[in-house]
Image (cartoon, rainbow, N blue to C red):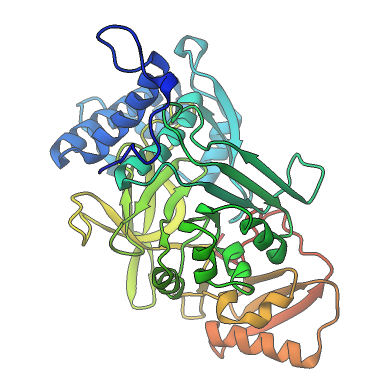
Length: 458
């Protein structure tokens, strides 16, 4: 971890002019919060595991005391001061809904923490409502800032985010530009500008014209938006427009895109997270597709017995325990993903590492023999798909992929043949395709507008 503050610099108002002090209190508090997280993440394994064990006991004791729901599940698990996860039932989405309705938040006024209601996006089923505290919000902000320190990122670069949403706005295309992106947590550092491009459709050419206007710096956007942009520009173009790093949102990046961006001199830094618990893992700097678990936020188990066979590999069901979920506990929560959990990373990182992560309802198909297989259609590999304003592929039966093509125009026999060939290329010749032309796709249960979702596994 190294940071050259001469590139960006400490703000003059952050420096204290009082004797025997270095920084003003607000700036000191912000820096302390970030450094605390880094200290936990970078500590030796015995120290880190000791801290996690204590935090697990804290959340278990709290839940056992405050909640009849959790008292029934935890029982005597904390009586001896030892954490016996095997004795605690797996938490499902149905359990979360029951707890939300029956008990609400477990935090009380004397805890002096604000509580907010939140919910999942619904991209893999009915949205799950839950409670979070102001501490969770602060952690997520501080942990994001900590990653810049951990990787030694340049704070002077601009930050450009493209959002496929115009929520709360009166126009379909809106650009908001602010002088800095550091916010309250990095209030002591001079940062580059912060540009938010809101485009609900999205319109690739319009987005590209906006991207050209200022140096991009850190480019934050969904993989599917990037694939749409790459029909009209190249990674080298993005580099020419000042892109230093692409930070994907929502889903991972395939190896082909990694190679293209690497060749153009653009880094890719994915994260693995969930609305319910925040950050789960940050991608390894040396190995694509490997995620170092966010030890300061969660613990992760891989339940192989409840997992699935994906191709020739057995992947476990990922169970997440959120160490700070006091408003509404997430303990051994079935996040809905499959993955491979290692004790360490090939890079030498001495800590739990996830790889081969698959969303069970997102990018896997189930075949008649019960096996699951990856289903990765990428617009970048089939440029002709870009001419359709909306697309969605869903497995709706054991032998059927339903393809919805937005725009309302009837499809020709040639187009239908192309979609059938595409489906069978990725899903196998034994899979049928139900191809439908629709005016607009109903995205109510798919707010992330995923290109593929498996209805059978959601």
